[in-house]
Image (cartoon, rainbow, N blue to C red; front, side, top):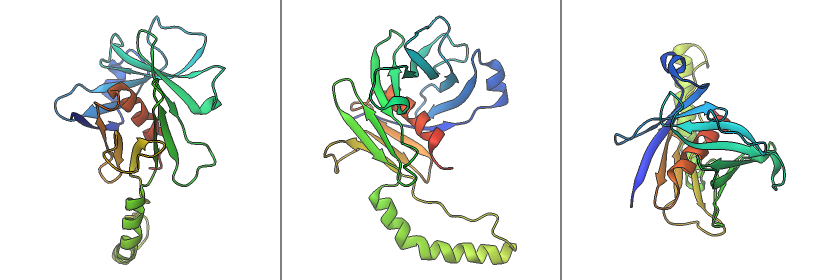
Length: 214
């Protein structure tokens, strides 16, 4: 079973100067895999009146090797502005990402829907991570109070709500290995590529990174 661990980072000034497109993020996998770049808009020469582009994933800064386009369909799809399609360079739909609603202020839900009908859903903060948070909260409170006293203020408190997210098949799928998982402590993602297309995982990770509380 193949798995890829990666993280979504910002970009350097030098990279933004070199890029032939408006560079936003860099997806950095482990294990010697190539860095993938997220740039605003669509690749040169790619046009569609039915799509409003969010960003494109590239394997180069020159913009000659797009992996996929992430775009919102203009009309005709349930979910409205929340739905973003992941489309390969030939125009085939690899999947659809459903973004959280504005009303989801707690445990936001991120969802991937695949062309064959499978649905992967993940909520920010898994149940085990919330249990661990509740158990350790008194300890963290003491640590932060001690730091506040020693530093003379509360400017740098070491406190964060659980952010771990596990995308599991729905309905069901409460046990077993998740096709995609985000680890809040290390800010890394892990995708099992035999269960989820790597391009869809990268697209979901960038979108998740954009809206997740920092």
